[in-house]
Image (cartoon, rainbow, N blue to C red; front, side):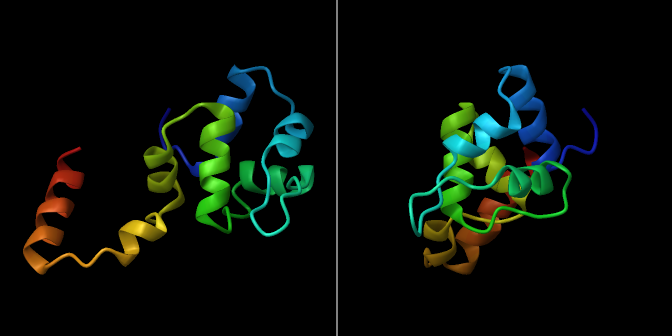
Amino acid sequence: MSDVTFGSYISAERKKKSISQKELAARVLREEDDKPISPQYLNDIERDRRQPTSDHLIHQFAAVLDVPVDYLFYLAGTLPKEAKEARLDPSEAVKAMSAFRRG
């Protein structure tokens, strides 16, 4: 797959596991009220009209679809909260970015 996006990856993994959008939406729970996301919100994510709004949702997608959470953070173009809050000195940050770029 070329040009993989967060939405296209979620869609492909959902279809690979034969899960409907309605089913997946019902299993991905919001952090603030423990209620499922709406099928329309999931549709917007899969069509790249929206991005997940929290680390919690990224973790939920990873758990429900059984996919690597780190890859989902990468596709979402963000870092987990704990990584953002880590106090790296500049040399550690450079090493981490170099390792990331090497793949």
